[in-house]
Amino acid sequence: MSIARLSRDRKRQLGQFFTPAETAAAIVKSLTILPTYRILEPSFGEGAFVFALLDALAPSVPHEDIPAWCKEHLFGCEIDDAAFARFMRRWQTAGLGAVAENMEHCDFFTWMPPGADRAAATDRQRYFASRLESFDLIFGNPPFGGSINPRIQDELDALFGMRNERKIKKETYAFFIVKSVDLLKPGGRLVFICSDTILTIPTMTGLRSWLQSNCIVDISGVPGFFSDTNQDMILVTLTKQALSPRRVSVFGADLSLAEIDSTPNMSWRVNGDLAKYFTGGAVGDKMIATSGMTIGNNDLFLRPVREGYIEEPYEFTFGEQLITVKNEIALARLGKVAPRRLKEVAQQQARGAMEKVLTWRKLEKPCRIKLPHPDYAFYNKATSRIGYSEPEWVIFWRDQGDYVYTFKKTGNWYLHGVGGMKYFGREGLTWSLIAPRLYARYLPPGYILDSGAPCAFLREGVEQEELYFILGWALTDLSNRILKEVLNHTRNIQSKDFERLPYPVWVDTERKHKAVLAAKALVSLARTGQELSFKSREVGSLNELYAWHDGLVPTIPIKEPTLRQMSLF
Image (tube, rainbow, N blue to C red; front, top):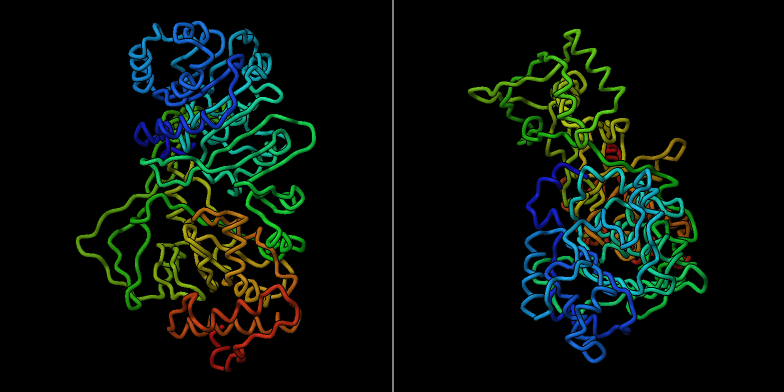
């Protein structure tokens, strides 16, 4: 769990998006609920679902019998003390007496149903020795994007982070779903309001795979409107059923399980029209994609390029500082340091060992420096330009980046790694991480890579022309449709999303040759200063070259690059 996530305001840390009463009532009304059911609401907030449930049961459970019924049949958790207090006041105002002891002020992740064996030796033994498969219905609105208590993150990961040999992302709503399904009886139902990211996002591949092998899955719309989030929400209904027949239904349409399985991310948005593209290879067979580096302080090292010059406001030098156990713990993930490492640092501290650190001084007047310069390298920040973009940023890179690496090495744990380091300086493709579609462009040799602009590079032995063939493919409407409808419909386009794109095996040799020439011509045009868009005639012609039908001839002739254009490569 990132440090940034743990430092957010309390509402965002808890992942709170309270359910409107009308929405909860509509959902409950749509369900068949028997008074004999055992029911759980694992994050009941102010009680929208609970009170909607009690209203729905009114014909079969008289008002005076509700406290006794709740004691036997209704269970719940709420971690937020303010929300729990509001729930208690509403309960008492409704004339229901004292709040049932089953409605607990606690963290669902540490909660166990009544009768659980709390004396087991380990968290894992205690969890699986508890009364799982206890409930007929679990419903509610689990926290989305919340912060998990750092003290129990690793323990929860051991419990919920791996199912059917696939990784489950350490995310609040994902872990809520896994634990809730564990707690369902066979034939029991889980009904959750959920972010629609569950449908395609690659990090939820393991969750989708496990759910469709253990449950009948129904995805539908959420009635009503959430005023405090712009995130698209869906209603996920899971009926626990490990035996066949399995089924995944999304907005009333049954998906083919074979087609879901054919997609690399187990997509719940694949359809017959797009499934055919996943029957061949993937772009990842030809290229390896990677994220770039997180610097930790961009203002310290990055400089915008203006008419071939930059202004340098700092003077950098190296210093030394004492290695200490206190500093090691302060910089470690969750403040945890392995015993062996702790012993090693303690010995270094006892010897008075020092480590190299970066120091800097702000100049009274910035130095104006003409590029190229040996202390600076081009830096690949994200842009919406396609085809090619002239370098707009450089990074202070004296002594092959030693100053930046030293700064990162002596910072917090999440800065120690250098993403994409082995690909620094290589020719490839790149795009913006956060974007509505792939703003793909050619990346010349010599760049240092930024985490906000993932890149892809040819695998060993792959012909160089594949770089342009795949660039052209990435600029088509078809590749974008596959990306956004099947692979990852969010605005976050990760390196693995690019690798999972189908490789256009359906393009014949003649059209492939034309596509390579077209992509090279696009890059040449962009390098001469022409700004391209997806409405540009030259970009639009790519759609015909990469179309599914064999033998399709583009209506716009593709001219071979001139000798002057070819020299730009």
